[in-house]
Length: 318
Image (tube, rainbow, N blue to C red; front, top):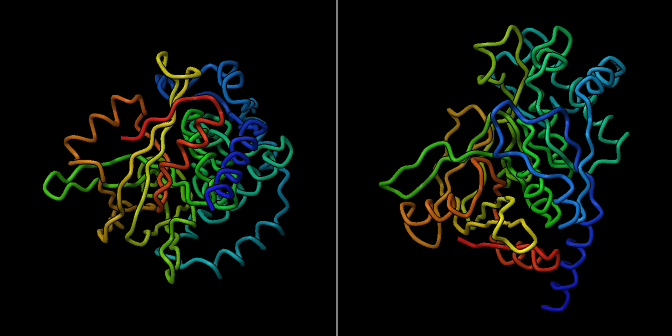
C-alpha cells in the first residue's frame, strides 16, 4: 500500500511539472503578496505560467452562443437550489455566459488552472460582462481546473496540488477567529468547489452579495458547507530560505459542525490540530502564507510534503 501511494504521489509531482497555469491580467494593485517570479517558479517546479489578456475573456464572452447559455442554465437549475432573485438583472445568465467564456479560454490555451483578476474594465467594470465571474471560476475548479481570484498565482499552485491529490480545493480566506472555541471562519467572495459539499446535501445559488451593493449588476455565487471531519489548509509561497526557493505550507485540523451561511458563499469552521489557534495561527503566518489558501476536507498534509520532496521544494507543516 505504501509503494502504491508513493508511486501515485510521484505521478502527481510529475504532472505538476508539466502543468500550465493561466494568469488572466495582473494581480490587484498593491497585492504584491500574491505574485511571484514566473521564471523562478518554472525552474523550481516545472510549472509554466501562461499570460492571458483580459480582452481575450471579453472576446470569448461575445462568441458564446446563447443556446449554450440556455442549456447550461437548464442543467444548473436541476443541480442547484435557487435562493432569492438570482435571475434579477440577468445575474444568472451573465454568470453562465462568463463561465462558458472562461472555459473556452482555458481550452484554447490548454490550461490546468490559473489566477484571475476580474476587477478590470474588460470584465467586472465593463458594460458587457459587468460582473465578478466567481461562479465560473468555481465551476472550473469543480471540474478539476482550479482558479483563484485577485491574480493570486501563488495560491493557484496550492490549489492545483490540492485538486491533483483528488480532493476539494476551496479558495478562501480565514475571515474571523473565535478564540473561545478555537475555530476560524472559512469563506470567500464567491468561488467554490463542489467537492466541498457535504454528502446528501445540495448546493445553493444566490446573488453575490459582495458585489450586489456596489456594482450596477452582480453575478451569482455558490453557498454550501462541508461535512465535519479531518481537514487541511494548504498554502504556497516563495521564500528566500526555502529549499528550491519555494515552500508549501500545510495546516492539519478539522472541520466542525458550525456553519456560516450568512457569509453568502461557500463556508465552514476549521480548528487547527497541532495546538490552540493562538499558537498555530502565528506559525502559519510566519511560514509565509498570504491571506489566501486552499481548504480541503481531508488530512492531506503528509501527501503535500511527499509531493514537495519529489519537486525539490520545501514543505512546512504547522
